Structure formats: C-alpha cells, structure tokens
Image 1 (cartoon, protein in one colour):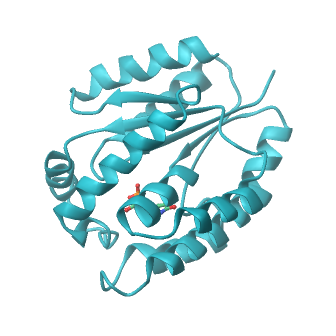
Image 2 (cartoon, protein in one colour):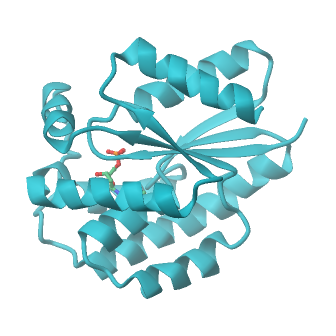
Image 3 (cartoon, protein in one colour):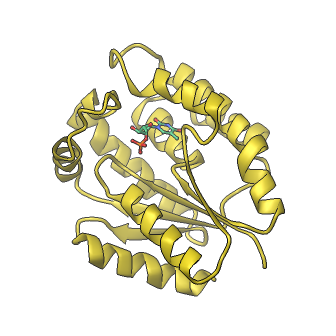
Length: 208
Ligand code: TMP
C-alpha cells in the first residue's frame, strides 16, 4: 500500500489532537497501517527538546532559537521515525509539522522567513506532507478552550503569549493555506467535535 504523510496544523485549542486520534483509530479499523505522532516530539530526544520549548518563561527563547530547537527535534523525528515509516508504506499522521514553525516562529514570532525557508529546505527536503489540514478557530475561543481542558499540564508557554500573538498566528496559517492550495485544506474547528471529525473524514476520503 502506498505511504501517505498527513499533517495537522492550527492554533491553540483547535481540537486537532483529538482529531488525529480519531482518524488514526478509524484508519486502523479499516486495516490500514497508521502511525500517529507529534511535533515537537515523536522520539525521546525530540520530546526532551519539546519540554524546553513548551514550559517556562514566555520570553526565554528568541524566535530564531525556537526555530532552531524545533528543527533539531524535527531532524531527529524525520530520520528516526517519519522517513522509516513512510519507507515501510505506512500512513503517518503528524500533529504539527513544518507549518507550525512558519506560523509560530515566522509569522507570529517575527523570525525571518528566508531563515525558515533554508531550514525547511535543509531538514525537510523532499519529505513534505502530501496533505495538511489547517484547523481554524477564533483565537479567543481557542485559548479559552485550551485553558478549560485544564492545561494544568505545564505545556502552556505559547498559550501565555497573549491574544495579539495568536491573532498573527491565525493569519500565518491562513497565508500558508493561500500559498499552498493543493496541499492544504481548511477545517472549521469552531464546529462541534463530531462535525469536525466528519469534515476531516470527507477530506481524507478524497485523498485516499
Ligand atoms: P501542541 O500544544 O499543539 O502539542 O504543540 C506544542 C506547542 O509548540 C504549541 O504551542 C505550538 C508550538 N510549536 C511551535 O511554536 N513551533 C513548531 O514548529 C511546533 C512543531 C510547535
């Protein structure tokens, strides 16, 4: 069976992680060989980098450092997990990938887009997703959802960046969508969770 690389992107509280789990379960029930993973993370080393990024003082890293850390984690993840899985013909579902660096560190964080282009070219290379679902939601709603889900988990450093950051972030994802109309699809994440699942499945039906 042909491999397929699908990424899930969007702001905070957009519900994409729930949808990754649901889609993975549905594909597995159909007998497909599916791997669900996430970024930053997906290997022990990349998860260690993740904990540096998602906790602590909001201003602890510059946007450029964040881009480099995310790309260090991504290199490990690509080499040790994603490329081997694709080579084995598996479907890889990744909760965040390269577009998050472009939106968070680039568009919202102010990191030079040329710098991000260079990292993307050097590290991602040809291993680009075939399909990217962009979960779009009003950041005020997304942030309150994220807080409700009890992000007593210590992973709230980005949630603490403030509404202006998250408005720019949403614009960043919408720009990525405009620039990559073949690869990216918009998902209205303001709907209830089952309606979102339905939309994800309709997009996937076309892709499979
Ligand atoms: P998550 O909460 O969706 O699991 O993602 C962890 C956080 O990391 C989230 O706030 C977005 C951020 N992030 C970046 O800033 N740049 C990146 O390249 C990635 C993959 C995530």
